Length: 209
Ligand SMILES: Cc1cc2nc3c(=O)[nH]c(=O)nc-3n(C[C@H](O)[C@H](O)[C@H](O)COP(=O)(O)O)c2cc1C
Image 1 (cartoon, rainbow, N blue to C red):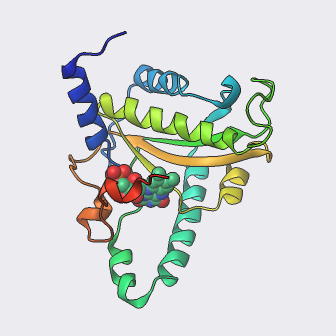
Image 2 (image 1 turned 135 degrees about the horizontal axis):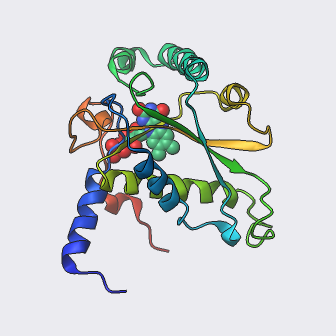
Image 3 (image 1 turned 135 degrees about the vertical axis):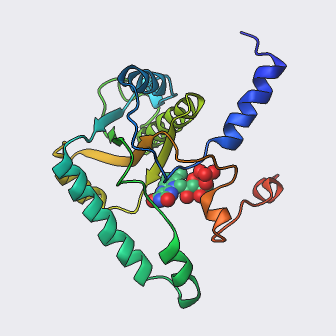
């Protein structure tokens, strides 16, 4: 397979415009498109081809409210832990789209998947979790290609969310995602625009030995 120069340029645009989205329109995402995005996420690499990702769609209003309460509690705790010079800015940040996103998706890792027969993870069992992160990123990019935004919410207690969702205790929560049509385009990370943090020079992240 050869990719064209145009595709390469567009692919880079995709990476630049992916964005973590926290402002959503309430308009539903077509079911077949969402299914397509999930199927595409399953093309992600995984240790031993174990495909340890498990997608839990959170639709029930009671469970959604309970997750939102967990977020609010954790976010309040994070706010109170901020240094005085950062607390005001932190309080103004929007750090989740849990009220508006039409789709909420908890992405789990099955920690001991039978698929793959353990290949590649004897010395690094955490590669099961890394594999699920690759699926999340694949989902994120595929969604963005179709105009759908994804926001990753990590200001939650995984054990509390796992209890709310009633999934096996042995599964590990990797990501809680808000998914839907973005409310407005964004060409730079919200944290950068808000003055919280900015992207650094890639050269500073590359070492030679
Ligand atoms: C593992 C992970 C956890 C994250 N958790 C949150 C979160 O809880 N709330 C939030 O608003 N953004 C969260 N983000 C999004 C980051 O803030 C965002 O990716 C970063 O600021 C860069 O912005 P961009 O994704 O729009 O390029 C998370 C991202 C990752 C990869």
